[in-house]
Image 1 (tube, rainbow, N blue to C red):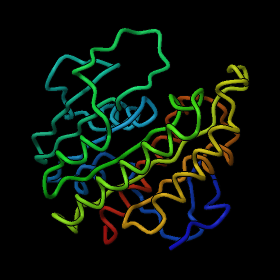
Image 2: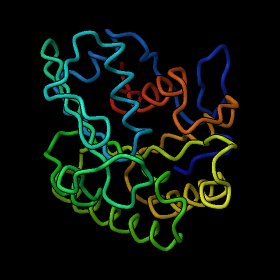
Image 3: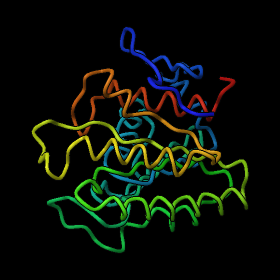
Length: 237
């Protein structure tokens, strides 16, 4: 199914999709029941790491297993419902002022190859690729596509969610980080993944509709992204 444009709208701070039903996954109870017994793997940049940070604020029982490292990888567990949430930073390139340990990050395609049967995978990339030639980003997407096909060959029921890029501040370096590059990269993701069995979370339309121009959107936007993703994971909830 192709994603319509616009893909939805906000009304009273709640997102309504124009193509599917968005479940009410905003409370701790609804979220934890949906994720019960699952391993949620978040792979990508800090905009998808925000999913873990938002879940940790909503789910008071979600505890970090290892010391919190905001720039490389994080693992949290929720023993009451027997599920885990893990975030890992994608491989180079990075646009950051922090030191990054090479062995602590991983290319998305390699991480997808390590996914176990039954895991839920969320991929969110783009912001760090904006200053570089589009060929680099497209080649990385092609590698991800091949990894997703390998994953579905060995585990057809594994859910893969692609979080598209969101808009960012207007005071960013427009010659390198403009939303124009983000739009081109979003279109590339739609093209590369369009015939795969994946879920698209249209963070681009969400942040545009909410007039939120921040590389790290507020909790309302992130909660909406999570709710839409959980609507695909637990469609009958």
